Amino acid sequence: QVQLVDSGGGLVQTGGSLRLSCAASGSIFSINVMGWYRQAPGKQRELVAAITSYGTTNYAESVKGRFTISRGNAKNTVYLQMNSLKPEDTAVYYCNIQQIGVNGGGYWGQGTQVTVSS
Image (cartoon, rainbow, N blue to C red; front, side, top):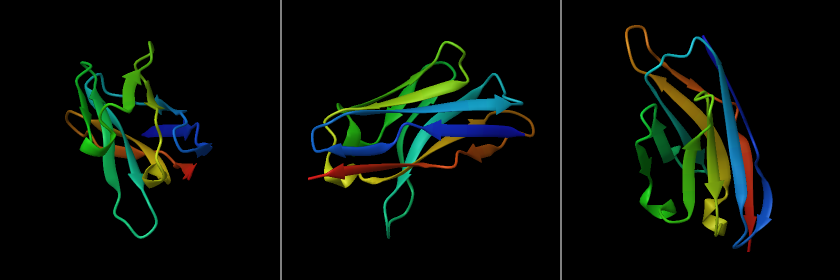
């Protein structure tokens, strides 16, 4: 089992910045993908950014150049630095880990609310 605790959301004005954090604990595989997804009211959950255990990153087109995903030194933490925030970034942001290997699986954090006011 893996537990994810995500935090760092809040209320910010357009153009502001926030940094989300996610800490994973439990039986974590050495090969995994950690990422951030978001879900706005009435919309499907979508991928925002992801990073592999090798450091390869992937971003949604809508956040490229504004958001940066990174891993902590402990490798079981992931951060999302969000700059130049826009009202359309408003959503609940969820941390996710996909474990690569036999009996691997996916796990979710509880979510953190990000609200960008215009």
